Image 1: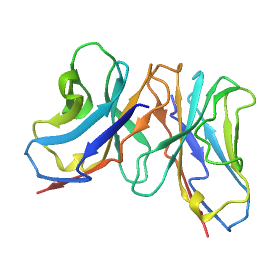
Image 2: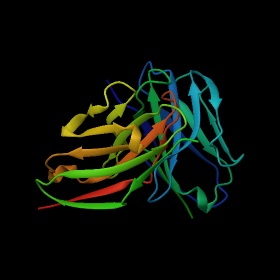
Image 3: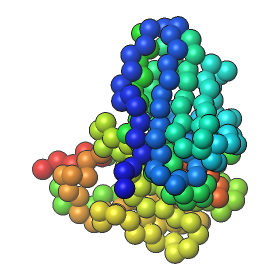
Image 4: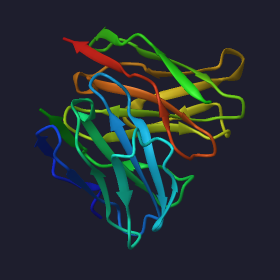
Length: 113
Length: 112
């Protein structure tokens, strides 16, 4: 079946704009993760969902970052009042359950000008 | 907190030569360890993972890694490099397979 998909693939935002990044996990995957990958760095954990419940949001860098997964499938990562330091690739991953292999999407590359 | 350190941000090998990418971990509990590969403009693909079974783990594309508790290492190897192996490689650790903590990555260059 299809893998994890993310949209848009590229997003350019002016500083101060709000953005919404979408993740479509593999069908039937209970767990969903968001990671942030700055240029030249490894991905860093942002938040984790088990079905529709957000069980861990300890990695969100500020209260401008908000994630949701209202029906336990598609997830949206929202960044309010974007700042230049938010420029990064945002990766979504899903797994059958929390301890299973995580499958990654291609990422959304966000550039804040 | 669990973490990994990847030694060498860039590694260059000749086609056909041995590939060795180094990863050391820090963990207070038996870790789950992973190697992922990332090709340009693509997501991360799992190469292999260690979950406290056999210490020598075989993965895809001819890669393998050995868990050495005494050295707190999980180095990635491949006997013979192919041009198609050129990519960014990430070592990662997690406790009980939860959120992954990644290293900074090693860029592998394969020369003809």
